Length: 402
Image (cartoon, rainbow, N blue to C red; front, top):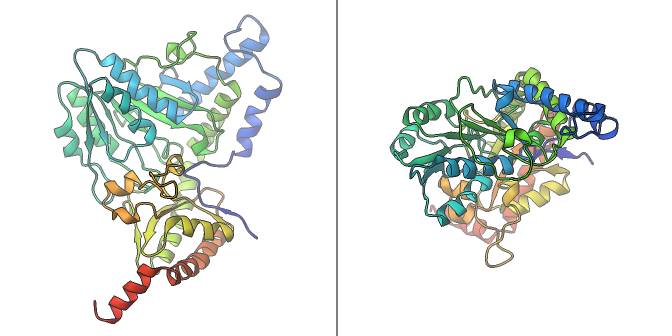
């Protein structure tokens, strides 16, 4: 049976060229960049410096503005907590969108506990933040604004350039979580006035456990990991040299090839979207056009999301329901999934918020794999509806003219 991976928003397979780039720093050049007296340390230091330039080039940054981290969660925590701590002057207010990742939202908890006020911006039914709402929310005591570039669950791309200009005019540090978008669609910090940008290696065909935070020159951020002076003092600890080299290789490949990937994924995504639109009572989520290429998300009336995923997996098709980082959350009853905050934010009925499906395609997916999904899903939906008492009630109402 064919195995079809349609969950690239949670992670991507390691590009073989990336593996070849990192392998020497696992086996041969294993030195510590801080031990730069001898050849091993010097080789590691040169590799990290080169990697910093290559990752910077992906987003139009300067090499000295790239801080390597263990991944997107650490980068988001450093951006939110580190910027708030350095704000000073009585600035104890933060503004975020209502669809930010848990690593942003939960980083706000200690700020709230410390007396910070947090304004959560609403989004429209497509998941878009209104720039005018941002302008109204910013205040003289605002320490930070955080709005993601694209949402992993519904695929919507936010107007971060316009939002960034509003933040710049207000003198408020602006953080953009680009975990889902970097390496897939263009993001240039020379055009988008973001002060901090989160990047995640494993989301653009690099390894897990490596990420970066762009910190624009002049932006004040307090460290969250203490020890030595690695990473310009922002992040102590011996650098993950193989991971950093690999992230840089993935960034360099993405810089050259993302346009081709986007065209390929755009075609496959449209094919999938058009094919799914024929399923009765299926509702797409996210903006229909301002969305990540190859990203298709939806919910189906009278068909529970986890059941859809399980049946798809039996057919060899791997997809997602909600954020990968929230899939293990449960309610008071251990059998009940917690409703997706993103779906709640865009107005999906509360009893449906655990039932969304996200197909996120990658550069290696094919038209044949899309056809397999389009062949399997309608049959799965039909089978689940046959077992659904709510669907039987719906059919009865329809037959009676209701």
